[in-house]
Length: 487
Image 1 (tube, rainbow, N blue to C red):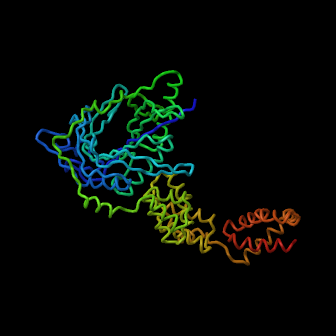
Image 2: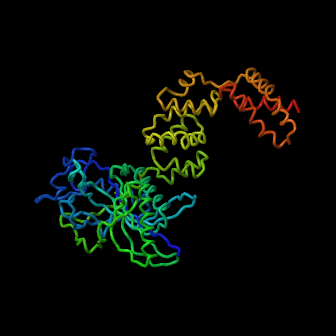
Image 3: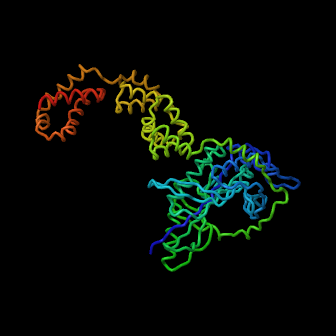
């Protein structure tokens, strides 16, 4: 039997407002527990919520970026349920009239193809607090605690149609949403800190079937890697159940990254279980056309537009442009490098090669790069003007990453300047030819079309003799002239 995976995502994005969605309490990250939850956030008697205009502005920005319908009239409901970290006993959210309606977004897949994924809607809501487990844990017992600082932080929940058919597609969509919200500046998108979280709705069906299978919702996945692994392992679990003649239960599950498995959390509720009703403390919010159009006029250049511009203006491949524009900080870094060296392709090669390897190795973001755009631009300039070879440039780059100064300082301090003196290189060529009689004879007797490859031996010996500092271009010119003279 051939099975098809069907995936829909619900992505929770914390909005980067200075205060909460219905109160003036701070949303600053890292404050001591329970110091940023005011009486309004906890719905204490006698308090009334006041909508945060910036949360609406952020939601409209997102909707416009997704080419989605904007709900000019949106309504807040109360979603009733009990969790220890939700002392109000309900969450203020949107159900019937969300701020953002249907839209689409195009994603790029690992095989180079593209796909459109439909947005069902995105709605505004408040975040809950945070449960902390195993505090002061010991061999005998542990303790749990509640931090309500996060309670009332504004969220947009982004809900897709079930359009994705693989874990790779789901990750590509999640990365695209991350890129859009960070370009817009409405969220920092830091998944490790909970600024962006994902629930994955996963079901399977036989290939060719139209009817959707029974889905399981995997809650609160907080990294791209875990999203991919959770979807794969959940799909395998469901397939095993169905192939053994069983039935998949509709339920909410948690992903255990240590064991790489999902486990049951609770049976899946439906909307009726939450007893939604319009919030009696909040009037419907009506947005004027002028408010929406002002936001539209001030939208920044978004990832797709920036990628297209990089392809057109800098002559980059779609693949390179996609990599460089996935994060706004990377795109800004790249343009700063190009401005400093005027070598778009070399700048892209160094960023997607040596710089990316360094950042991955050290687990750093582009904002934390130990090599500044100016220093990388200076290094590329020294390659282009022949001061150093590409091979030596890698040594210079590593030294710059260790804080040893810019390219010129490192080249000077380590004596790495490329040898381009034709007299000195000619002597090295003569010495290598004289010491390589057998290779010279093979070169002379070889077919003409094979000789260019055979020159590699001689070039390698000359580079070794020069400790890697001889100019490869000059070497090849002199070497070919001298070898051809022996034919």
